[in-house]
Image 1 (cartoon, rainbow, N blue to C red):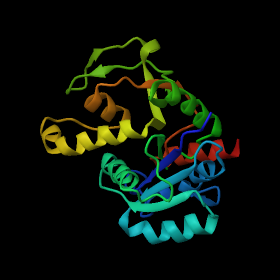
Image 2: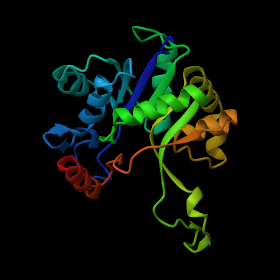
Image 3: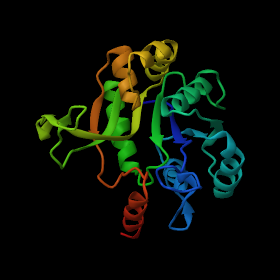
Image 4: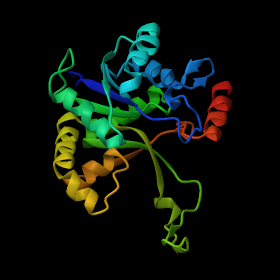
Length: 245
């Protein structure tokens, strides 16, 4: 059977604020390489991913192209584009590039794998599992069951509710969708954005965009507790330990 085209969107437009660093977190040193290198290396070697749109900050564009992509020989990175101040703006920019035919090979009816570049422990197994799931249901996300009891709180910090832990999952990336579906969802989001922000909607991930804009269910695909997002100095210490292990 013909394999549908798979494009990775790797997000690396963050700052170093929560890391308490002057260096953007995606370029911080992890085991002798920039943090972003690890996710891009998995994408480069993957049998599933065909090409990649890399999203970074305007001030980091040249460094990302020269010092990360070219120096490492990441040939699957088709284009490096500028992201926005919010994650959803960065994804929207990447999808516009995809829809506008800026990739060497179009991806009109394949799949899009949206991944946070600050998650260095992406694996081919996670890519394969989400790929199998998206082929079946059109929309899925990597996730893990919560090990902890979760409380919903009110504004004053008092516990309101304790959801059954069996139904609580922690969502990761990649988040994977049919190309047409995710492009349609983000087009609708950006068209209604001022109104939605006035209503207090906080857009935290791509699955939420699909759920809210298209009323589509998104499947949770078991991933790995190692697939952490490196956001704080504590995370970086954990990442170094995982890298060594």
